[in-house]
Length: 384
Image 1 (cartoon, rainbow, N blue to C red):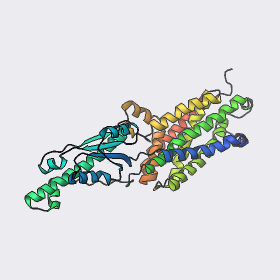
Image 2 (tube, rainbow, N blue to C red):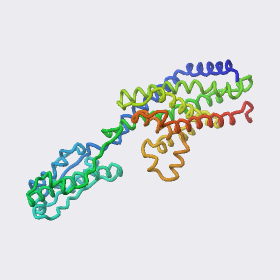
Image 3 (cartoon, rainbow, N blue to C red):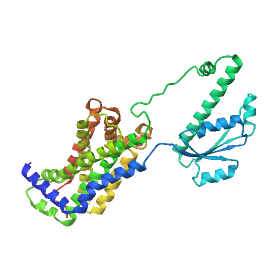
Image 4 (cartoon, rainbow, N blue to C red):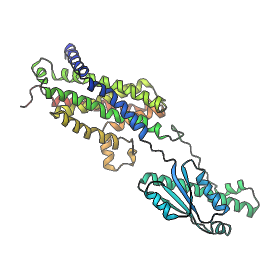
């Protein structure tokens, strides 16, 4: 390979990019815009659930029970009602997401040592959200029932309420959340959005850049020149790799300073891994650009090859171990999952090369394989 010919191809490609001002602006604006849109719009936190209570008993104990829900930060209390049909209608119009019904004789049954069933009605159109809401209600109900039992045992045995509570719960589970103590979904999503955006943006830029030359016919100058296949491909993709690396730094700044995701790892390692990942995704665009002949086809194929894997098979929405067996195989065959582990590790866990070298090695092999495939498919003597 001749380094001067590679520099000439890079220079030519960069002038093409700069000449198309709209393409240049979109190359840097679109990734940042995607980060802002997804960062603000995609939240997995289940809080401020619109919630109401039907209290048919209206006793001291029923009001005390209801106060456990109204004082919870997970529920946005919308008020009391005695009309279940009206609350059910509000569930259908999304004004409410849940309500509970405290029956008559609630206090009387509890004081008599009987059970007092409380009904909860949840909007199940979002299964994960409904499941979490059910967990909140069950936890509040369990805590209230334990407190009642402790008070009953305290009065019956003449012991302190604290002693009675410990006797009723001899095994206590102490939960400590590591790496994301507040369980903020933004901390988890913002780093993974870097993975998603860099999975989509570089292939689009590369595929459109190469195919545009095919449509204009200027690629015949390359066919007729002394530039080799490797020199052309390296010179062609280098500007897009560098632009994507710059974009990755902008995305890192947005994740850490705008969305306040903590970065605990080594930035040099992060930049190295990101550069290799960008080479992977640029390689995807290179292979697509060799296979298609028009920019429309390049956009469609690139969208299918990058958006779906980035969203469904990378662990950004569903953890990889929770996927089906076939889906896990697909996830392991794509580069997004490995880079997702790297960004999560460097941002939240402070891990580096020692812990993530296998992911980095796989990305490196993936990038080499894609460029080798692109090299084998590209010909300076295309079939007419």
